[in-house]
Image (tube, rainbow, N blue to C red; front, side):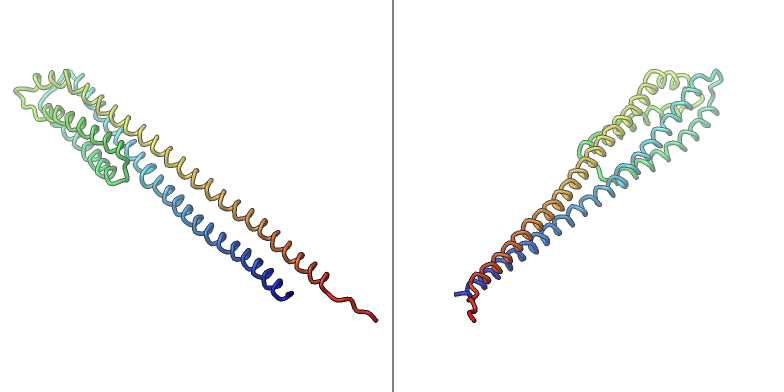
Length: 228
């Protein structure tokens, strides 16, 4: 019967339209998820990569400043208890900045490898600090002895500390590249979903038009001829 055919055609059209709506909703949900992932990645790049990178840069500057001060002190021909006290005040100034930046850096998001590198840097920094403090706590009686000990091991320890911080900086840069690669992958997925939505809409739209035209063709064929 003709009415059953019309119902079948309408059900087909309704089903195809439902498919368009379902696909659109699903793709919209996936796109929202991807947008959130991209937003999180960009925020992480700023909060956990760019800002900490500047902190590492400033820590490196303070370490090099300490190295310069110590170099100037060790090459001073008039080393005295007063010069050591003055050096101690200068070193304390840089140490406070380094500790502040290090505490700030520890609160950022770090991958396991970064945590491992950070612990290694902190251990090296503490070992150097012991040598530095041993020198700065010298008295008028043992200045030359402690200066000699620092020359033997302190300078090399400070260089290793700077190298450890440099390694951490390089690792952080690599992790930042990985985050950018992940964000680009998510963005490509978003473009794919948008393209898929467009293709599905076009294909299903064509199918709907074909069904409508087919139903009209059937109606015309089944219309009775009017004989005058």
